[in-house]
Image (tube, rainbow, N blue to C red):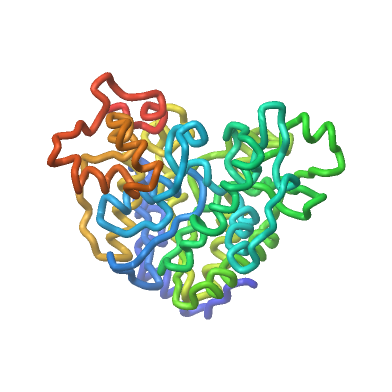
Length: 378
């Protein structure tokens, strides 16, 4: 549906809002993050309970929320290090509207979990609802982990008052035998061995709007008072199955998702679009992204979340020296305790014990490869 404005109202919006003119924003493109004018539909408080769903940028959002004392239900997760090396909940990153919808729909209609829900490999079984690269595990472990994610981890959306969704990409693989969309691509061996089972869908705006509407509807059935914030992750596609140049494929993917997210949010007062994608993607890439040119630089994430907290909660921006990945790398015993859910995060341990114990905030031997990749080398 097109947005229609009375001609006089349209002119009044242009005249009254300096941010509507490019000439007033020319210097913004030199900053990281880019200062974007945004009027939130609603306000939040530090008493709100957040659940974040999305790509690795969602994990960035979580970390910077907890530094400010915000309760983030999606942080704590049982996670052996071998299954999620960098961030303890990184293996549950979700990239597409349809794979996110799976997890919420399963809260209303829990699935039967069996061997045909997984991809069999020589070394074990892979859950294609997780991120690519999670090592194969024994079948019973794959089943137990999937049940845990449904009955415990994603079930926490029922307790959340705010769900933050960061959309990642529009290329979605489908398991045609199961009639379900996947979060990760099946292997070439699987596709070659069962050519009719898997297919790639390059989704358009309408398909993503439909999935987002279904996602919102399912969330509100779980909690009618919940508010939804939708954004698009600035993290680019790592690769594209479309045959297009990766830069073109990434631009198309983000354009589709921004249009879909905006369409959804324009329809509902309880759903707001936060322009984190624009704040990062319009900035100079050398400043906005870490060394791998994929992950957003930690300082820029801090700026984006600082803006979010200011707009929605009225919290002033503060410089916080603590960084979750660095602290856990410096304190392996704490990392192990977090993975056993004895603490929801390294930050919780540091505030309750680590600071008094004089725990190091960074590894004494220097930054790890994972820290360097996401801009935590200093």
